[in-house]
Length: 80
Image (cartoon, rainbow, N blue to C red; front, side):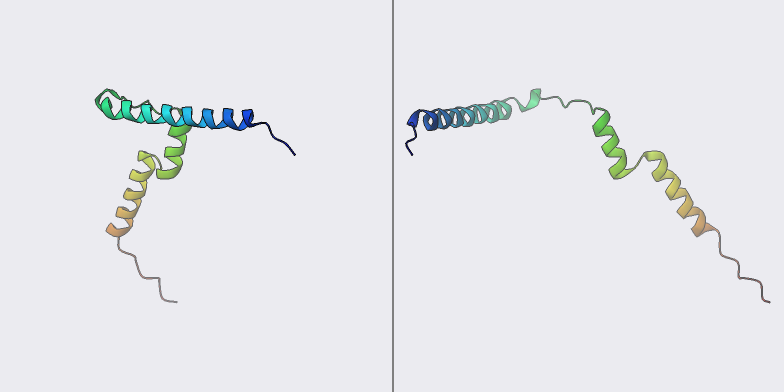
């Protein structure tokens, strides 16, 4: 079957332009790295952070529970 070269040329040209834009973007970001300000975390990122590492309150509660177990010696079970 015969394929017209126009479509493949257009696709190739689009890919080349995308690569040029990506290279220019990387160059610009490298030159202006001191001007980049991170975005504040949105609700999804905050939720994911809590799921992956837990909240500070739960970590402190876990530390207190572990410290409490270590500080209190176990009593032997009463003999029958």
